[in-house]
Length: 114
Image (cartoon, rainbow, N blue to C red):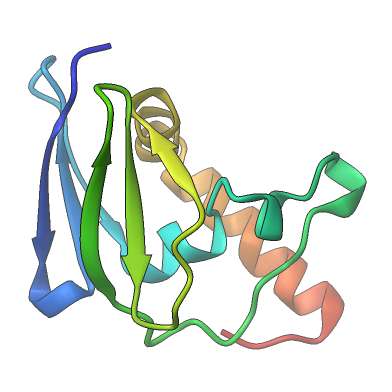
């Protein structure tokens, strides 16, 4: 997959991702933070996945390219360990509504807030 065009928008509140297919998506910083592909969030198996709450106001501080396949997103809460591959960003873009709904359901089930 070709590297997408990335632009931090709205003073760090969102990331615009533009793919070579001319698909453009805007993903909120909160969405990206709570679905970070890092081991801290995803664990090493589905059972170890952590539901991250309290990130409603998190912002993107910096983007750091990783080779020609991913970007490391540095958030203002200090989290920066997730490598967002182009294919992972594409999947999040296409399944944004589904993934967000699942996240909100997890929060509710665990008594957590955004």
